[in-house]
Image (cartoon, rainbow over all chains, first blue to last red; front, side, top):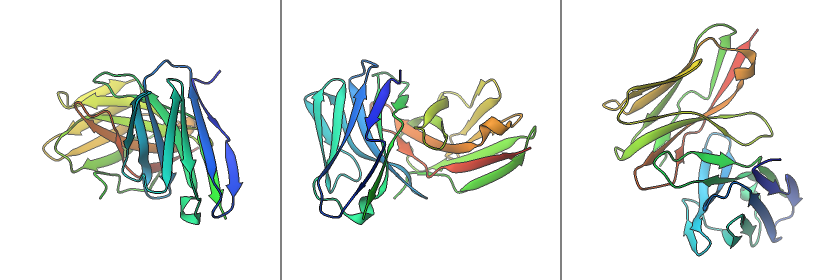
Length: 113
Length: 112
């Protein structure tokens, strides 16, 4: 079974709708991250959390919110989706340490019409 | 402004030859660098890393070279195989900062 899972894998929604993307992990890591990938821009950090009570904005947090329901679960919400939020979204986890290897989920492809 | 840059969006190489992927960074605080590989419909997976105390790290067919003075790193794949066809992301982080900054990625196509 995958260590980092994301649901849904694909989602099409309309402008103005609220949508939630969910991430679960079985790696036992405290640190979790949400990224979006856009062509030509690579992966950009939206939000990150170093433990259940710690939530931090990344470089592109506007229009997004997150919830860390438990060590294993980290959800990303789009309160009112807009077309330029159409992208591939990845959740990742990591363990503290000098070697900051992050482990990624399979991604959610979101289309906002 | 992107702190990690991969200026070649794509690279095509013949099977058996060497693939060289380049990455430049601007933040002098970066001291740990990683390469990730991504296949379609999958998340990125860690490939190889290097810390700033080294200038080379090797793992099988993959070698990463770091030139700190030039703020440049490269990934060499020798020999290239069809299964190496993927998008490769360069990433960097600074000590004590557990966030990664990613480049835009380079799509590698290995021709038979």
